Length: 92
Image 1: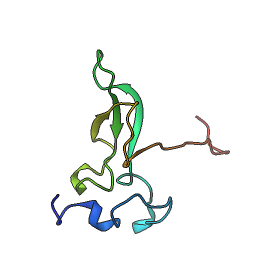
Image 2: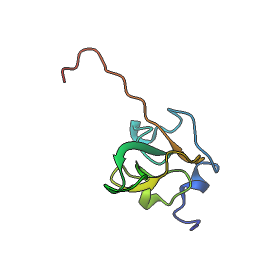
Image 3: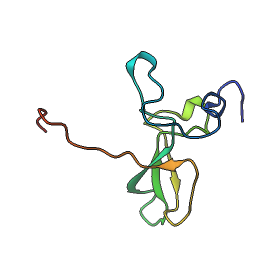
Image 4: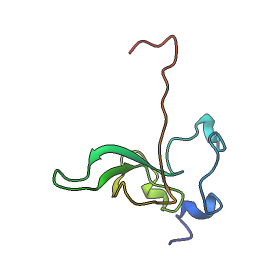
């Protein structure tokens, strides 16, 4: 792990509470935990896509465009979910 670019050193070695970081008024966008996606890694694979990097990865992986994979039957300390709720006043 590169101490210059690792988020693990910035985030005390674990996930952080929602809303904890507010640099530039932005928060909770990437880099806390990998987010599970429903997509298969490959058409013939059991692995599912995860996105966004985690506290354990370097800064270059803490962005929503980054993809990796994980097996749904396994447990990972740096994988999670993003829950979404509709906001009144916005049309889809």
